[in-house]
Length: 214
Ligand SMILES: [Fe+2]
Ligand SMILES: [Fe+2]
Image (tube, rainbow, N blue to C red; front, side, top):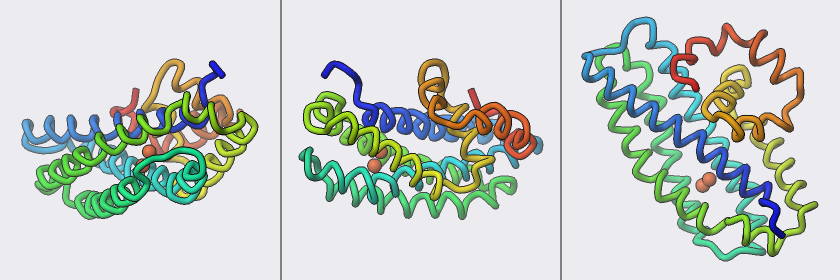
């Protein structure tokens, strides 16, 4: 019973990744606004970073709506209707993010910052509800470990299908967390992906995002 729930651990990790992506994006907007523009060498990478943040968030919400929440419902009481409504509201914000990106080199950083703030305003309270409701203790008490591992596999499979281009999404996931979190996140990922595809074969594709990574 004192083992940590792998479902909760995965949930908290992805929240950490998205939270960092969001706060770096906001910080960078502030920096660009104070400099009156994005240095030309960073524009493509920044746009790619924010766009990948959108994909990762979208995919995380789909996995919760399609797999995690329908499963949790039988075991844990939580404000599912509100959580689902938050996802719908954030989906609208993610669309607006996409629309802002083509404009960022021509004075659109202020607008992007506004949209990121809107996202942040919903994101913080939203993950707080999830993290308070789907705690390790609660899940460990009601869901067998074997079932939890099954659920983690299903969630991983589902997110691969929905998270946009792997050459961008995977490095975004790897390099927005560090230390133990990164090691735990990478553990189930095939060797060829973490040692060859991401760091070598796909490197030139994601390299513009590297100034924003850990
Ligand atoms: Fe959520
Ligand atoms: Fe979540």
